[in-house]
Image 1 (tube, helix red, strand yellow):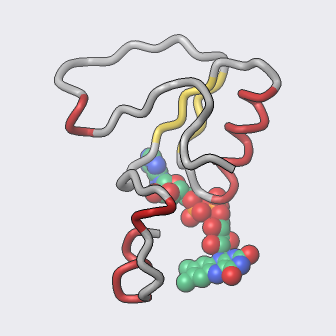
Image 2 (cartoon, rainbow, N blue to C red; image 1 turned 45 degrees about the horizontal axis):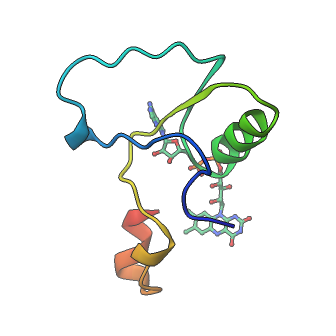
Length: 74
Ligand SMILES: Cc1cc2nc3c(=O)[nH]c(=O)nc-3n(C[C@H](O)[C@H](O)[C@H](O)COP(=O)(O)OP(=O)(O)OC[C@H]3O[C@@H](n4cnc5c(N)ncnc54)[C@H](O)[C@@H]3O)c2cc1C
């Protein structure tokens, strides 16, 4: 499984300098265990999906497998 979606884009807070308007079929709030699966399944079925995530953006390579570092990232 890839760290990034095959299509689409990721905007972090630093990328957003003005209002962003999207017209998705579905908006999923939270990219945790539930939201990520729902978003991936819907996108795989062809829906246009926006995911809003309050937390930071981390990929597999960011996790150092040390609890003190990794838990706050989770
Ligand atoms: C230390 C720890 C270890 C665990 N270990 C395991 C394990 O080994 N196996 C297992 O099956 N389960 C484990 N769990 C439980 C598992 O993590 C949860 O059951 C699961 O993550 C819940 O999924 P969720 O989608 O409901 O919420 P989460 O995974 O918590 O996702 C919620 C997401 O929504 C985001 N969010 C919240 N509010 C907003 C908002 N207003 N706007 C935008 N984004 C928002 C949050 O930042 C977060 O990313 C563990 C939990 C903890 C705390």
